[in-house]
Image (cartoon, rainbow, N blue to C red):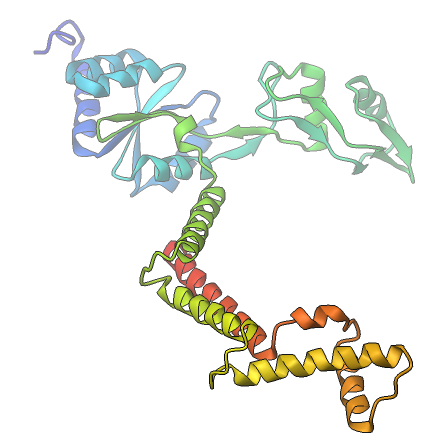
Amino acid sequence: MALYTHHLPRWKKDEVDEIKRGIAEHTLVGVVDMYGIPASQIQHIRRNLRGTARVKMARNTLIEHALNELGGTVAALNEHAEGQSAMIFTNENPFKLFKLLEQTKTKMAAKPGETAPEDIVVPKGPTTFKPGPIVGELQQVGIPAAIEGGKVKIREAKTVVKKGEVINKKVADALVKLGIKPMDVGLLLQAAYYKNTIFTPDLLAIDEEAYYNNIVLAAQQAFNLSVNAVIATPMTVSAIIGRAVREARNVGVDASIYEKDIVDLIIGRAQREMLVVALAAQGRGFELDEATLKAASAATAAAPAATEAAVEAKPEEEEKEEEKKEEEEESGMAGLGALFG
């Protein structure tokens, strides 16, 4: 018989052995706090966890005996077995277990002496109460209550207890009457042992949406870096080639290199430059021939803000290429999103 349990009565030894078997048969074992949970809710939680996790209620001393007998890194769970503890066994990973336990929590009324888990705010608006002593009771705890339209109304939102403060009896009674249930009641995971590592709640309580968004942002930045640094990958090579083609075309247009793929762009830019000059000349009193005037008027209608900046405007074909590039990059990023979605 193990040194730790040789002096224990049979029923306690059986409890210790059951805890040890649970640890041996599962990939994850955790210590949970059950303080303040009504018996009816414990049964409800057990039903919800059935098939996924098993809760074993035991005295802290027996949990300590079992962990010490097993020894090794799992014995470190003893440091987290405080209050009204119980063991939980599962084959899920610790992050899934933490999320599952959070989902089993329900809201309950606050009791005098409990600590506020978050700021407790009484919202602004009407209540169901008729005029009476309730107005004075609410005002005594700092809730701005008044009578309006034959009903008691809260004139403005009020924080009655800040996070970490103790809830006194008067505030607790007022919250009950207002139907405000600020307390999260459920199994509180104190620590989980998984693959020779102890996980505490601060490591497991992650914002999944923020985590996902960070991954997507990192993927987008990596994509842009790859394109700008010309690091060809299966995902970025199309965008890199497309960018090179556009840059080469722009150089050809700027240098007036008469190649068959860009000669139309050069002519189109020259025509726009000519129309800008024609409009400027018209503004100084010169008369334009009918064809030029018609072309200039059409250009003005298409681009009311046409000025000398039109000399630098991109040819329509370039704009189409830009749109195509954006579509290609968006398509590439959609592929990245699919990897994480």
